[in-house]
Length: 322
Image (cartoon, rainbow, N blue to C red):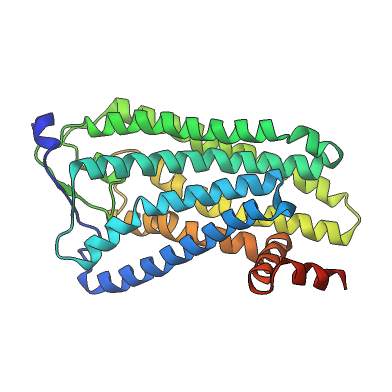
């Protein structure tokens, strides 16, 4: 059994997609493109939400936080992944692995809670429109975001400490493209019932409970929408809520499948890698596209910013007034 001193000075080998060496360059190209889309798309949403006063609303406050989460999440994974895919040395230091594991857990758990907060915001907007500004006041929005961050931090600290304490008996190969919990647990040479109970409990708290609240919120929203006679309002609500539901389906579906399984589950590791690739790389790049392509407010804000940047503020204001 290896000692803690040995483990803290030994590099880990990230096997990644080494079983398909012919696909590594293709995968690296796809990942690089999606990463660029993530950077540009999420940065655009953050800037637009901050600079355009029309978007200083709770919905875009939550959306800009989601975009910031996605930026941090992918950045904690992709650069190291690309280095390993492009170079002959597919390794990561013990400290780098711990940090990557911790930040991925922290940011992923925070996003679970933040998506639930966004569902409550949509419920208040649709079902309590006359009291929306009173219900979703800035202090409440800030507290909901802060609670999401604290919840993610606490769960990450607990899971990271328990997982990294597992004896690995000299095992250094992480059968994934980054230090993710399922792969690190499979490296251990012992079975930890305590860790499985903690993972399952936190999975219920961070995945199933928020998802249930989201589904309940949208059930109530659906009933409210059916009573709206205005086709324009009905279409706008469906667009806004549909974007959020799409993100929820993509994120929660894959995360629940990966993290709610027993440790001794015999699911193919290769299958797990591609699922992990989907919710860590592809989903964060799709979020800004989902929200902007289906949202007229964001598209209008982007047009106003481009107009001001290219033609000046006075020119754009006179153009809107004519």
